Length: 181
Image 1 (tube, one colour):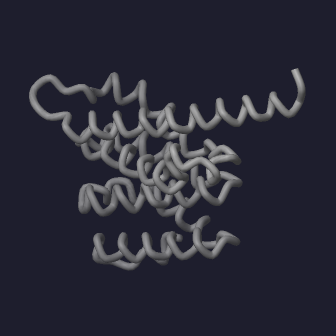
Image 2 (image 1 turned 120 degrees about the vertical axis):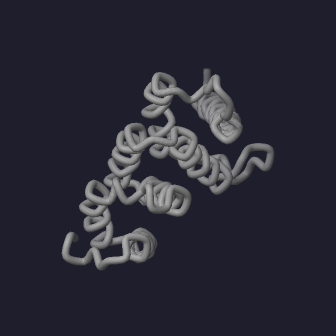
């Protein structure tokens, strides 16, 4: 097989995988969103099984041929799905016993070398903050050191999002968090 054909096949395969990833994330988001009633899908066991595989999607780079293909979800669409999927997972879980490991896994992603992954991690923290509100305060102690690092980030987009989240946390907690950074 020629090298040219191999690259083309890899490109198609990675586009298929990207599309499949988007469909799975969308499906999981809907499962979490409508997971009500007495028999919950997202119990502690399923939460723990799904947590790392879903959060690991933050580090997956989009295929290089993505921009040329209009039939496949864009990077922005998949990024948005990741944020709402993981965020809704936390909201549906409804307990800080499950929020803590989720928050920790997301925060670890903010230490990635990839700017997109750091931004996604921060966007999820912002989603959690906006949707869990005061309930997120139990996670501040762990979150603040990560935010401190991100406030020093070389990428302006990362730094400014970290500043925005810090302001939101200060507003929610009713106190300045500068001394803890």
